Amino acid sequence: QLQASGGGLVQAGDSLRLSCAASGRTFSSYAMGWFRQAPGKEREFVAAINWNGASTYYADSVKGRFTISRDNAKNTVYLQMNVLKPEDTAVYYCAARRGNWRYNVGEYDYWGQGTLVTVSS
Image 1: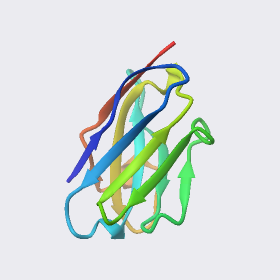
Image 2: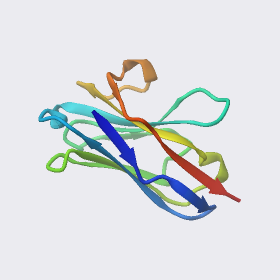
Image 3: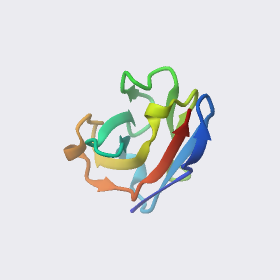
């Protein structure tokens, strides 16, 4: 089970840190991803991290502004979002899958409930 938190209303240029807490004892064996879905749009990949945190991957739209990280001792993955833009407004979801990270929504096995990020201009 995944529980995302940390969303909120911020102004353009601000920062937010999202957290995703996972239950279970095998968290460290899962690749983790963050996705987002804006109103009227499909869910899209944002960032992913492999099981031990050694490798990270980002969508071009967030590269250089967002950082994904994980703490396996706390069963938690984070998404640090800096220099937020109005186009970052969306519901953000964390997801988990066994094995290597994937870009596609359909290749993740478990999903959190989402946390809303709203960026005003």
